Length: 120
Image (cartoon, rainbow, N blue to C red; front, side):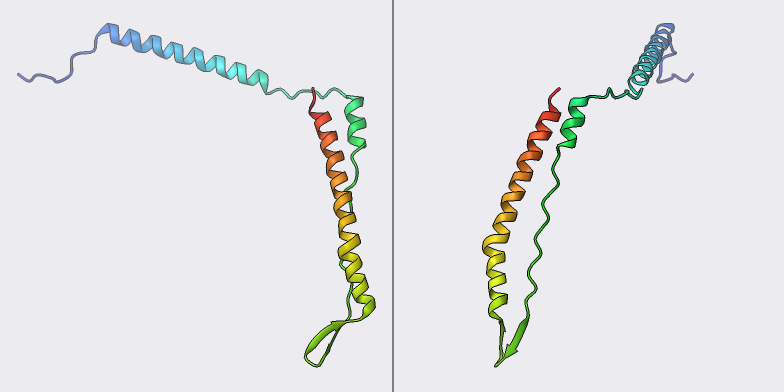
């Protein structure tokens, strides 16, 4: 006579399995219904305040173009004319700092608008 290693299934175990299965099915049904209800697209309410704020957004300043320089080569050295040197100095001393200031203003204005839009 052979003895089995497993005990015969009891009615209590099968009832527990069925009740657990029923709980899982109920949980899945609740999750499906609850997530299905939240996936409905929300109609956006027109807000004139937000439209005005968005219309106030400034345009980014244009990056200044590097001046065109006429290089010459003589006696193994490269050089530029006096007018080109003045244009290069003007670019470094006036044009770039002015661009940096305008860009700082642009960032400040955009930060103010974005902060105002983030408020509920």
